[in-house]
Image: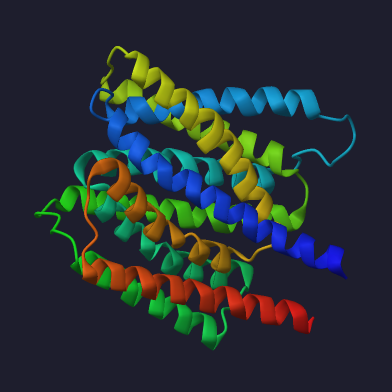
Amino acid sequence: MKGAGARSFLPYAAAIVVTLLWSSSFVLIKWGLTDIPPIYFATLRYALAFLVLLTASALTRRGGAQRPPGSRSRTSLLVVAGFCGYTIAQGFQFVGLYYLPAVTTSFLLNFNPFFVLILGTAILSERASALQVGGLGVAIVGAWAYFGGISSAGGQLLGIVIVLVAGLGWAVYVVVVRMLQREGALDSLRLTTVTMGVGVVGMLAMTVLSGEYAPLTADGVTIIVWLATVNTAFAFFAWNWTLKAIPAYELTVLQDLMLVEIAIFAFAFLGETITPLMAAGIVLVLAGVAIVQLRGRIKQRAM
């Protein structure tokens, strides 16, 4: 039984590590955006990460070990996941961070659980319990308190809309990947590689259309390499792996921990302060996430 308990805890621990990596990305991206145009920056990051994953996939592939990608419907889902999860969600997030502070972008992305809850209920039949909905409500109240403790976005409506679209794209990605993981036709590495490859094609098209390029500095190259290998290739593989064991709604609410993590990173590395109202919001978000995860653990024990 101990071994089973450890295995059930591992996906949650992996998800928390991923949130820490992704939270640090906000700081690294803000640093990189001082010299690198946003879409060009995103394209370089994900193109390099795709090459890393493609190499790993080729080295670990075993002939006949799994069913081929196969049907048109599965191929369509892979394309939708790649376009929404990378071209839209990640590409637009870079643009949003160009227009908005990291804390504002983080707050707006806390609406993701609403999108995932709606899509997950409609498509995956993964209905949240009343307690989980209550936990989400507590987390959202905390997000509003946190947002109330920082300066206004200053009417930067374009950036707000862009980030909300990025959040919707991520919600679609999470739900579609959860569908593909439940089907089990592709392992997590191949799934991540294929969807990221689709997303990179879309990013390349956006880069060409924007026509925005810039020479890279040594610092810029270092940031891109770290983001691509650790915060992207490894982190997205780990995130997709956790979707085998954790319902999409629970995993996305767990992602709200990034609100807390980004506040700490922003304070330490970007010089942003944490007011008492922001601190109260952080506590509420942590409480809401704990309620959702506690409910998930109770259901798991009951089974």
